[in-house]
Image 1 (cartoon, rainbow, N blue to C red):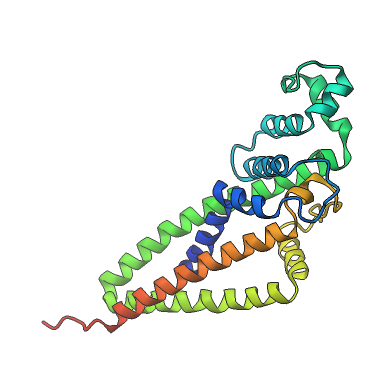
Image 2: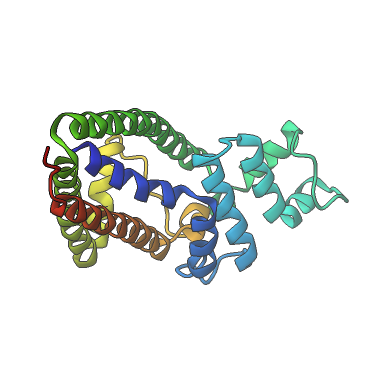
Length: 244
């Protein structure tokens, strides 16, 4: 079970990398909202800033800086500023950004959800590190007490378990991605603050195809690692025990 959790966690780690969001946002951002007021590059910038706020620096100032940058023309007109990139340190600027509302900003409800996601991932990361250390200890103990072939058996069992689980989850996602997405969020965010208007900046920058791509990355990473672990386990299991 510890090995299975580690394999799933490895897939999650790859999903949280900046390069993953960069690539997927360039492929998908804005694809479901052709009427967006933002260019594709601005939506990619928004997607990366949202990722950084969620799993990176968690800096609200940097999130506001992104919103100020992609809405610079609207802010200049609203505040009669000559500087197209006004200082984000000003409370006046932050208030003006908030007043833009609608599809122009990541609003308070979206930020609240991102805070919830950050909390879940922060706790999960600490737990995964602890379980990873425990896994190494258990594997070493198993090897010393029962021999290398038992480690092979553990690796095989963990790989098979995760492959079976992800094949089932992948099938569910292919058949009903929206239902799968809703169920997944329902487990971690039972308060239900994860649904947003289709034209909101959150959904425009991170549309359904983005999350489908993220699921493919998670599935592929975990399955590949599981197959590798299974193969290593099979090799170890086939080793003949040493005779005295």
